[in-house]
Amino acid sequence: MFTPKKRLAGILIPAFTPRRDGDLGIGDTLALREWIDWAAEHHVGFIQLLPIHENGLDESPYSGISSAALDPIYLALETSEIPGLEQDDIDRVRGNLKAALTSPLVNYPAVRSAKRALLELAWSRFKDVEPTQIEEFEQFQKDEKEWLDDYRVFRFLMEFHGESLTWNQWPESCRTPAKARAFVAKQRLADPARVDDRLGFFVFVQWLCYRQWLALRAHADLRGVKLMGDVPIGVSWHSCDAFFSQEEFHLDWYGGSPPEGMSQDDPFFQQWGQNWGIPLYCWDHMQANGFVWWQKRIARLMRFFKVFRLDHILGFYRIYGFPWHPDRNYEFIGLSHDQAAAISGGHLPRWFLRPDDTIENKAANRDDGDIRLRGILQAAEGAEVIAEDLGWVPEYVRPHLADLSITSYRIPHWDCNDSGQPTPGNAFPENSFATYSTHDHEPINGIWRRCLRMIHHQECPSEQSAWAAGGAHNTLRILSEFAGIPVPQQKSWPAYSEGIRLRLIKALFSSNSRYAALMVTELFDLDDQFNRPGTTDVDNWRYRLPWTLAEIRDHPILQAHCQKLAKLICITRRD
Image (cartoon, rainbow, N blue to C red):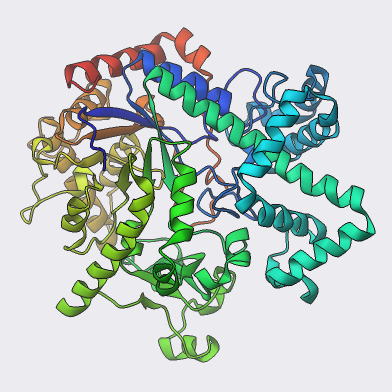
């Protein structure tokens, strides 16, 4: 596997987050192109993204309806980018979007509706575009036939039966792959023009997606900036993969994570853990066929990204499973194990295949992970692979990842010795990815301010709030010691300031880690969070920056943040 020699600095910016003049209420490939240019100018070595696969019934980027199809919501809908589109069409749609264009959050229903209307219009005119573009489209169909044939059938059936229904709610005549294909073929015999039009539309949209993301990758390569993708541990239960490749999945068990204590607000999370609703893999079947599903998935991803993150790497060793769909979570709140088993067919949440409760089980789980990851990595030759190994990490995982040359995470305020002292940045492994926060956490500035609030609001502390205040003091101490910020004698912690921000960034970038990343919110001292795990918060996955890059360049304070970042990257030799 290729090992880069340079230490790199990166910025995490989800594709939905950036703004540009002319966008349609969400980030798109042209907005990301601007950020690639910004990164090249400021010595930023990589741009980290969240998954870009097409989403279904919810807007989490970790619940894709296909491991191959890309989400058209990130398409840049400009006349230069979409054959058959005219400026008057775009202006009319922008006029209808109104508040969605300036909203601090993505209005997914409005944006999807607007973009869908423009794509339908472009498709209706596609027969009249330049012959070379039609030839390119036809070649795409040939090249991607292996996954496109099933995908377009799945999308046709989603549209035919209603987007809100999952495939197990379709009529019996469509609930198996063979029946689904036969149903569409029968529809085509009855009305070939209509069916061919709809099947063609879904292929057309994917051609545009692949076209724009491949162009974005080429531009990033030209500017010397690496695009970092993200591979979710699973796909949605309501996905083309789970429907057409049912033998690859356990469709009656759902992946998640166990409860991690009583500090969570959600009562189900407190008692049972997180139920993500993704089907578990039939690893035995996958191993028997050489992990072909995974290898194809990774090979496609490598066309767009030079670096990629494997989400929840612990799930390749063992994963926590639920015997009920998340829609039923509410039924189990407050029940005993016996009561829960009585309404779940006798099953309870458990580890698959086994827990890490004995030396023998740990060894077996490590061996399973070794077989699975080695099989997957065969398709990743030449890529840089990052493992999201956060949470309660079994002691065998990180040494094993190191054996496989897979990069593991380091979060400074979580990485302490038995005495509670932070691991110095110069002691981080070279093959590691250092960051203060991920998309599931507050930015470091938000963490600092929240800790201060927890400490200062203790006029009549209860036992629980006193415990929380103690934890806040400890977090600020660890961060201060890691960054070389003087620790106050009386625990009178200072407010978050520009000096503290720069010290924290410099300490992170000075670490021995091969990669060091900030979230874009940390760059601009914004406390907003992209996602709050274990919640159905209406703000999840919707955050947008308040400014375009042009506005950032014209704003003295914001531009100063960018210039200071570039200087710190050079000082710490990550340029």
